[in-house]
Structures are given as structure tokens and as C-alpha cells.
Picture (cartoon, rainbow, N blue to C red):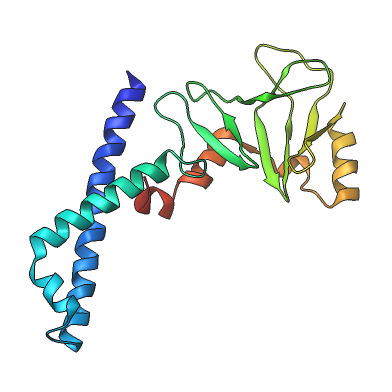
Length: 193
């Protein structure tokens, strides 16, 4: 039910955004038409209703297509997600503190689950923490370009590695919620679906 409510909200948001973009484009066309009377921009801007309808339809469809693209899909309802690059998402269920990636397995065979992470220079860096599984190690660095996973038994081991590789220290890791709002909040929320 949460997914359906969020999807309907997103469709309404797309309709409002498309209307606003169409209106702004119409204003732009009218400003150009004042500089060049009798031209194409003048003819198009005089048919405001038809212009707004056509532009709104094209914009709505474009925003909907973008919403379901890799870089636009943020999940619906109780399944938020954050794209981290190279086709990978950190998923979440019910806005718990845990993020996970099903496609990556740790050295002890569990799926990669974390409470804090950060993406830096093509690498996903995080702690290994789960309410369901117990991990042999505490931190990881997943190089998304090479698809290689390095694990570290302690925070000190990771921090030593981070200094040698010029990576962020463990104190710079952020929760799933912080990563989600950093990625999807601000101007993104207002300008895109």
C-alpha cells in the first residue's frame, strides 16, 4: 500500500513539475517572440493552450522515463534505494538503519549489509553490520570498477588502510538516511521526480 501511495504522489508531483516547466518555457517563447515578432516563436506562443498541453505531455513522459532510470529511481514507499555507481544500489527496507546490496557477498558468504557507508572515488566504503547476520569482519571497501571486496577485522585496520589509500576515515561514514537525503534531497526533490 505504501508503494502505491508513493507512486501516486510521484505522478502528481510529475504533473505539477511538467506544468511548471511548460509555463516557464511558454514565458521564454514569449520573450523571444517580442524580440522577433512574426517568427516561429511568436506563432507557437500565441497558441498557449496547445503549447502547454503538448509541452506538458512531453515533459511528463520524460520525467516518468527518468524516474525509472538507474540514476532517477529512488524506490517507492518502504523500499528506498540509493544509486552508488556502476549499476549498484544500496537498498533499504522500511527505513530501518540497515542498507544492503544483494549482489555482493562477504568472505563469510553473507550479503553486504551496513548501517553506515560512503561512496568515494569509485569505491563503496562501509561498516559490516546486520540485525540478521554476524560478520567475521567489521569494515569493507568495495572497488566498484574492479568488483573486488576488501574486508577489515577492526576499525583501526580500516583506518590504517584508509590513510595509506587516501580514503575517508571511518568517522566520515554516513547512515542510509543521510546518504538518501543527500542524494535525493535539496534541488533534486524540487526539480526532478
